[in-house]
Length: 287
Image (cartoon, rainbow, N blue to C red; front, side, top):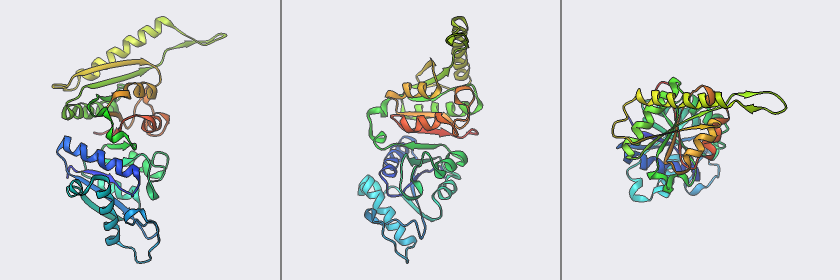
């Protein structure tokens, strides 16, 4: 269907995700569909009312979703957004919706099933199992001046990073912004009273990092895109956040090696998604 799917739950984070998704849909000329999961004990009402209704059903969920979409976008823009309510758990609803979708967009914080998105089971399941890229949007990041900034992508030589690079190149092309390819490396250390870097080996590693960036970019079609590179002696998350200061988007693969190892399970992905001043997109390893 090539639609952009947005997880909605009545939270400010979901509203931010929807606004960003609508803008992304314009870039890509793709329809946007807002998806709200509900259950007897996970009810949504217009205006954020959280009372329990034993007769709650899909019709009432649909009214709540319509109200949330209009509140986030205004009546005119809301008319162009598709709506889907699902009686299911939030993660399951979004994963079902990811089949055939171009992207799933979620807010960095939510209510109900989306609470603690970056730490809990919903985010873990969506990020690990979605069959399409997943964008995480913080409140405020969807409306910043970074829209004209570069698309930042983490490169480490892995197949996963290669998929993220291809996706980031296409994104930079449709946005008509530069691509900033980032590689982080760590120096070798020697022991003693204090651990000190080995200068000669550090120089060699920096040179090797430059070659890795060149090879990765040479393997892709970057026509029509202005490409810049950054190689930084630091941790992967630090390098990406440094590069993301003026970015419109940060893109990472779902798996990596070196500084990006265990990206979706460890501190790198959590740190970048929590602290990036712009939306973060995680691209599945087979994209």
